[in-house]
Amino acid sequence: MILKDIDEIKKIRESAQLVSKTLGLMANEIKPGVTSLYLDKIAEEFILDNKAEPGFKGYDNFPNTLCVSINNEVVHGIPCDTPLKNGDIISIDCGVLKNGFYGDHAYTFSVGEVSKEVQELLDVTKKSLYIGIESMKEGNRIGDIGYAIENYIKIHGYGIVRELVGHGLGQSLHELPEVPNYGKKGTGKIIKNGLVLAIEPMINLGTEKIKINDDGWTFVTADSLQSAHFEHNIAVIDSKPELLSTYKYIYQALGIESDEEDKFNNFFNR
Ligand code: MG
Ligand code: MG
Image (tube, rainbow, N blue to C red):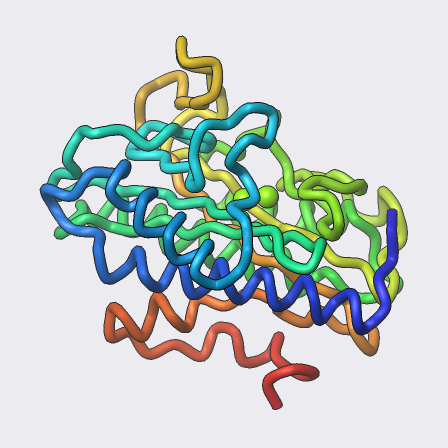
């Protein structure tokens, strides 16, 4: 694992915050009738206008700026010209590269009115992300993060995607260590100050089993039920988890009040 000094963490934060603003822009645009290709175009223009590069475009030959995963799609969906419908959920994962450092995070949005069952999947998945982040303190181990997420998700009976995991973040989009969303307490590498992670639970309404589509990119649930994905970028500073990304731009766009990030803002936002 590569530990970062505060100047490097500031650069990752700048990239992460640009992703946060891009997701805020998406929140304003998402509604029935809009296509994910249109969202992709707006996101790319915004990132370029901010003197950064889309972090995913061209990565392993991925064709677009956004990964857009709708309903039963788990992650890595390719933007397309199918209009969104009322009741859909759409996970948008976005990466940027600026000053040589990556930001990479994601949010699952509702399109119009979603069912109670699906709304609960979104709420629980996002909550599990914060529960995981709480475990990212100096002296804990990587397995403690996955353990915390799994323990909370288990109560709800959802499927935790096993094949895809969170990761270290910095000058590369994906650094070690891998951060599974399941695990055993007290296992894995020790968490230290300067560690920067992308923690990203991918949680299915039904089975944990997934498969890959014919496009070679899009992962979908094996039972075609919905899947949710929330991702934040976090650094360990002064032994505590510090959020580098934020959902506040999304919440501003949607008129939502939330204090969910407050306890992870001790260094930069106080
Ligand atoms: Mg991501
Ligand atoms: Mg990621």
